[in-house]
Length: 84
Image (cartoon, rainbow, N blue to C red; front, side):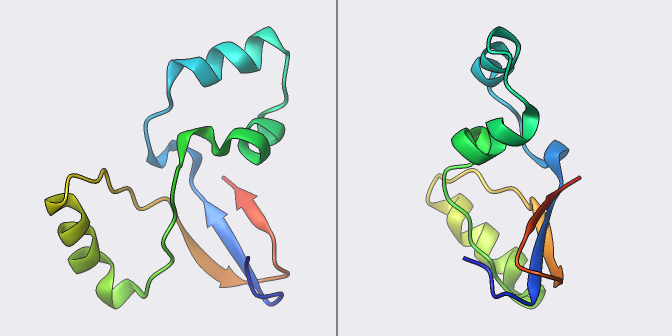
């Protein structure tokens, strides 16, 4: 959950998409926004961290075998996720 005075700006091209999502979207057809809302488009876990610590946290997670992608940023807003 985001605070009501923040937005999450998500860059849709910042992680690889699984082919199953393209198939489901076309077969439905399902709107892209609905695909993100229902399936998260393959993003399983999100951490929101200070930019100051992002690289060191990413390195540590990678050492444990996790795939890490910087998918967006937090801005002043109204509690929404914005897909770009």
